[in-house]
Amino acid sequence: MDFERQTFEEGLKLAGLDFERPAFFSWLGVTPYLTREIVLATFERITAMSPENGVVFDYAIPRSSLGPLEKMAFDAIASRVAAAGEPFISFFDTVELIEELRRLNFRHIEALDSEKINARYFKDRADGLRIGGGLAHLICARG
Image 1 (tube, rainbow, N blue to C red):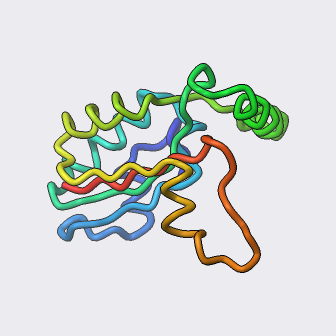
Image 2: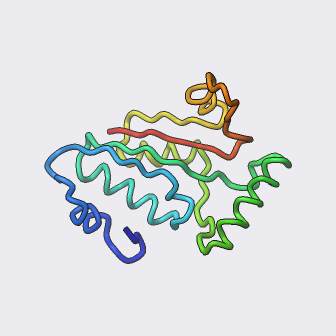
């Protein structure tokens, strides 16, 4: 859906969501490309529809909070996505984002940085695949 031109509820209705039942949303690969206002409004709508709803999402942290090598990796990725017409728009400080989610009535919040993502999802891979640097951040939030 196009968050700039369509309401969250319109998109969900078109997708066939049953608004009478709790839902869990996978919102991966989206938040960096939307305005902060749209991201936070979407989280607010998720909890307003049902206090039992939840969401998992990734997000970008501010470039200024990265180390020198991470900044180089960030710049390369940001340049590629911008050239494809999808520049990074929103960045979130993890502590502030968790506070905002709590304000929006999410009660169970788990934040994972690159190290925790690697430990949970990539530690036993025979091919050595891992998330590099400090660029990857996930949050799972439920009511």
